[in-house]
Image: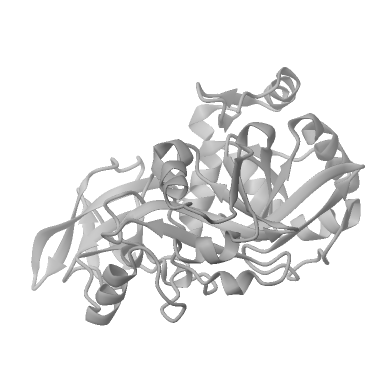
Length: 369
């Protein structure tokens, strides 16, 4: 999605630096890695996170739910009520990721949030290939939808204060991946709770023409301008929370069970594409590799792709790879995600990347499918 000149000018006035794809890379000085925005979210309790461009798909039609139920790993019966949400995955016949998304039950349709490039990368063709006679309508709304994060413990309260909503909006009242819709300053907004930060976090979907008006209304309710994070700050928050991301840690060579996706897998819902592989792996219980979180004390960031060694019987043995890393939100450590091979992925396992030692930690546990 092309960023309008008005939005670009407003964001640049806040210090935003844009990348070639229209995303905000960072805000302020690159070396600060969005520290002001991170502090706003975690210390002050409220900050913006620039999330566009994102991909937004809607799925509608009389057969939408039974059709999609046979393609995703989660149980869509958990979305029976409007406003309910969940994380899910599409997998191939070999059980590997084709795509990953956050679903929400919007009136008469499902709203699907995805990483940029997911649809063109194969998911849209995958979905269309499986529509035969079913009454299903897929609409890519990415170009007409702007996504803006409002993260921090004060987010729900200020949204409740400045908006009118179809469902209750208050601190702790919205379940993970659930949400609501309504108006802020007369402008339509869809809100979904997301797990991308150690603090409560929401993402707003709205018409690009309404972005600056909604931001102004929120900041008026708060009584001050809010600091903003770009991609740099988002990655720091995400890795501090311990949540993997499609296109980074999650891709076509990874099985969901290897990446902590237990919440997005329903074992008792019936058949879906790729189910046999996932069920067999769950029964066997020993994936070839597992994604883990790690904290490393270092003055400079370890290199993504670096070998990770595990201390086994007093010997350092190459057992994994560092797949993502960012400076911790507190600044004293680096947080990363690593894929570790069988025999070396137990939580608490001592590891090292180069000369940097740490212990494996679990990913964030999310509510079930």
